[in-house]
Image 1 (tube, one colour):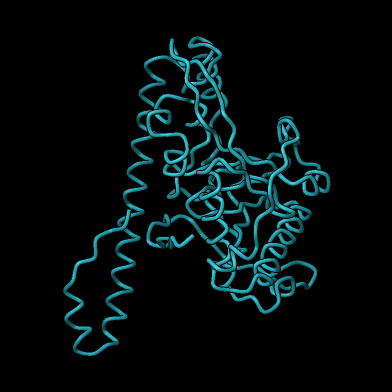
Image 2: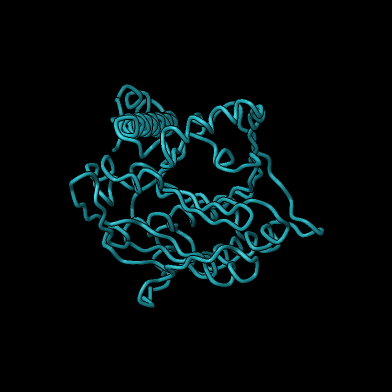
Length: 314
């Protein structure tokens, strides 16, 4: 739980826009989470993300009150002539959100009625250096804001650092995981072989709003509206042409079609690996800048420390 995660702001695309929003009906964001600063909120959810990573790596599920549950299930698939058994992360949305907002239910909800232990607030509080009451207030306040946003018909996305994104658009709930998280959990070899894992992957560089049809979503825990421009709709004759071509190639999507599928999977994985390397470089750059700033405050001793190169932590 001692890992520190830094988000690289310079990796955000220029065409993405984020704006802070106040709540509707005269209610302010802070009214649901009194005495909790934006820094505390970030620290809490970063610690929750690390908590999820640590427990899933040990094949232990985690239940977050009023939000849902993360777990690891064992899957067996046949790829070509090879049978592959691999662990796969799953997320089950909380029943209160499903019922309240008529969201699409997961038919495989907690197989075998498996009971998962709830998130331990004291452990998260220790990692975030806040009180456990602040942790509880922050999590419950965030889930309440999510529920209110869904009630207003907005798309929402909860970004969990180094884990992935929970995205709710309309009545559809989906969870996407980052490349390095899937690699850690399922193994790099399986990630390159199993198409189901590829379908679960999302780039940490691409805007979350680009995953939606409308190009807009409220990003949590920051509670910011993110928007991206949507491409113009294609003409009818282009759609018809592509439709005819897909019928000739077969009913399976492109990622499942022989050599072409294998090439596209490799291309997506190379792109994800490149994004992760860029993320690590930006993280190392930010750590170096922070250490140089701290060293500069120490006078002459700090000046000597500025010449020390800091290696990126992988």
